[in-house]
Length: 402
Image (cartoon, rainbow, N blue to C red):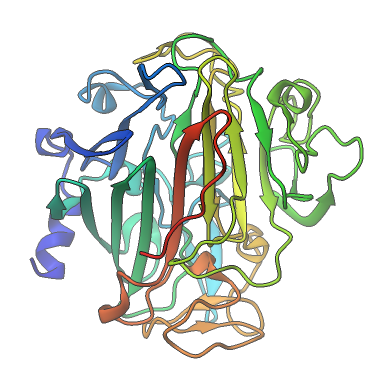
């Protein structure tokens, strides 16, 4: 399919074709997806007794994704730019762009604007019993500059879900920041919240500081010592979530971007050791997240109030935790930033302009670009995530090279 044809399909109103379920199976894991938002809709793994449990929080009926009144971004790929952008405004190469604002009464752009990647029908480009690749052609969606070709590939192997996101700008420099927005409750139906789950972010000793409407200020906060958000050692989610007030005015809970203490992120093939580990005592299910991204947004479902019905029951406050690997790009989150020159921008060739230039063909020091460096490489580099499920007492496994 040509870019023009794919773009027309991506820009078209959502259709029932976007709700067709694709299910992948491997030993110890079953995962389902729909093209609408390249979205994870179900994730089933066995608990310590061998009973299969649903651990993904989303709608039981795929059609509900078209009917939802709010937007929780359940299981979706979000972009062109994930997280919040102040005033939805940024400047590239001297030209200022305005993205549609959809957050805090129109003050900011969240997850790519009013109709981001989560609210578009992606095309199924390739499919096997254990893998599916979705494609999207973004032609200036929501006010972003230029054309971008985006792919999301999901693969299951023994006890593992692997996610790879890539984006290739075709004609203009543009900011790109992709992530997935899956919510997990590893206790499944055995516990209404994740507060008693154990959370470990071994290299997450810093978080991005935000203002009263959750827009990054440019500062970085240490969460060492007795800070409520210090999860560098395993502790119950409730220990931080119920004491943390670092996610905007009136916010209590976790809704923060943790920055990893590692000098050079690994490649999308190796991913490196787990950056987030979540475990449920109720089921014995343990999740280890490996990523080549330099940061991860964690959200403990603070805004839910029991009014949304999901496949695990009513979505209660703190009833799930969203895990969103991503880059951190403070300059573009600030409305007066120019993302060229000594900061960061993405060029049509796929190279990256930063204070330290890297050769084409490998990830830069700022992998938030989520880029393949050339069309041939689009499957072999980019945003990488591995989610490994294992028993409560099982030894954590590292991701094998793709």
